[in-house]
Length: 353
Image (cartoon, rainbow, N blue to C red; front, side, top):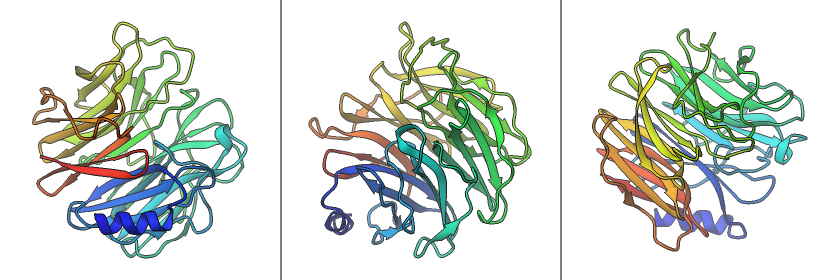
């Protein structure tokens, strides 16, 4: 880990940490990272030992930098030696966001080439892409700002050489919260995003491999009436046939971070509160029958574990008091989990057991 940090900082010493994403597949961890600022270069790293050591950074974007890179602005997904990255380029949309760009590697991330975009061309804002990958089918979910704030989904069955016509999951959603996507073991594909009226998180599911999608259902029906942008998304995980979601609400009487469970991805129950109003920017993952959640609160990173999705361990802090830590991610690693986050001057991580 130390060698990786030294190499990465030597390459990008002039900029502070921006954003990153982590994806686990078959015991291998995949990372996509960028620094702060505009027109951000994206780099990929891989770990085959649960995050203890990492390959040297490899540039992914091929001279097509991201307009910005913070939470949910770029994603990575992998299955075997096939690795994909998606991000928003500069354009005429919000925060100068533009069309989605995709890159593909067929050799485990050693080299990268340009792939087709699920959103087509244009210069208006397409933001907060999410990826899910299973059995060679790649699914993308994103926010399209050409007309209102549409949540769109598309799939590729040929390694991102082409994509299906976009399916509109919601014609008018929240404008500024990142999306999540999950390919469950039963063949279903799930999406999670923030609705607009109310500003609760909504879930949708496809039972036919992404060809069609259900109508959205509230994942935590808090009834939060809010005319503004919370800038807080959610996350999904599959465990023992159930789907779990971690969501945050700013409702004045219920403000906090919650984990919910569902049998079908549409009817959600058993909301368990993990943290109060300041507990935001959470991530969720599973390993076997266990779940791990991470989130930020008060400039620190917190974590909790569950064996059944309903009862959770007492939250523990992972970061230092003065680290200004934010935007954590968590992934299965070895016999446990590994959490990742950014601080003032570096990216950091720690094992969860």
